[in-house]
Image (cartoon, rainbow, N blue to C red):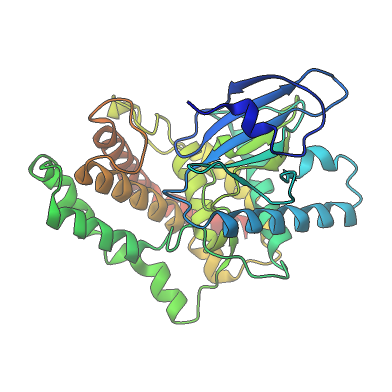
Length: 360
């Protein structure tokens, strides 16, 4: 078993460690809170990086430092005084590296942002604040001087996800295909429409920006009053389409049920959440958005929900190799819940388009 105290000792943290405890419920990395003994020293976040997913840890950490340094610079230029709570800070190892490799696993530490909280669910008021925050996050990174690398190549590339899906169907490693064939057929029926973003990019019409690519509610930190402090979990921040960030928030926060809800009647699109997030997002992002990006934001909600359905189902057919599961049929349940949400988004698509137009 890994000795976490020995790992922490490799980093340049201040203070004496009091405790190291599990933190959060992320599906990818293992995360711990490091509490120090004195109230005068920072607490920290220790993470074991899942290098089966993030294969180039050096690139990953360099990306994060480039992003956080640029955001910190922008906040200082704006006269922001609460920098410590508005920008993540990476702690280097004692030999100056951005991560530590123990022979088996890669580790990193950031400063824990004090008096902050995350939410698993969010109301319309918080959605508006979050929309503004993600728009500001993208706007601050529009002029990032150095190009970022892709921490997960083709992460939100729908054509690539469909190739993987078709390979999983062809090999049927887990022998589960017959059971899920009806959903496979439904998803393949929509495949051409769902590759529109990549086609528009190749035609030079839809640009790539620096996007977060994992805009869940719990990837935001809020202060004691429910106001957004900053965007966290920057592992997947890389070049992508704004449709991804917009769509993934609607997919997660705009779901009236849970991502893996066993009662599919619970799962629908919450239009109040959509309207609030869209309003905040457009207010802060319209300074750089092109008309084609704004026009396709509702499509982004459909695209990311479709993509996640494909990813969950691919993993289920492959035998549960990617996502952590809590029971054998977990990825199948996730697939069904996401597909139900996709159907609801399709039903509301015209309403979403009309609302976006009303904001412009």
